[in-house]
Image 1 (cartoon, rainbow, N blue to C red):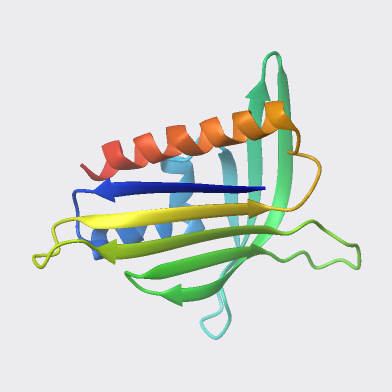
Image 2: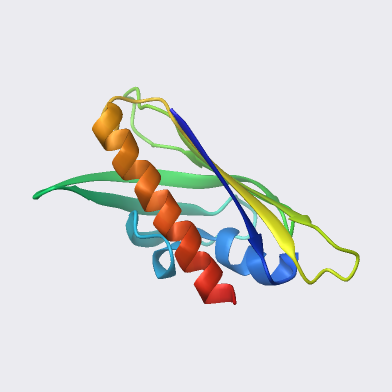
Length: 148
């Protein structure tokens, strides 16, 4: 499953990157992310987080804890976060990619393209995919409100 969401933000890429380049900032605007704990602060390695995802489906809640690593980072342009568990079990991939592109010469607007790719079964099926897509849509709206 892949969810792609684009939005035009009325801020420069640097201001927007503060909210999408570090998972610590996501709980402020992404309702899917229930909690984030930074696990790695070493300067010489990619940042690492424990992330709890949670979404409601009617009276039920579905949650998942992931260990995520930022695997690519180009400030003000790109941040990629990938699931990176440290046990010997097989885990379904989760990849979140944030691409930022200035859209005018003055740098006053930035196009953000967020791509969430998931290859497992816990959040699969038409109902859960709609719930996940709705969480991402609500997060996009909240992010625009936060930066405006």
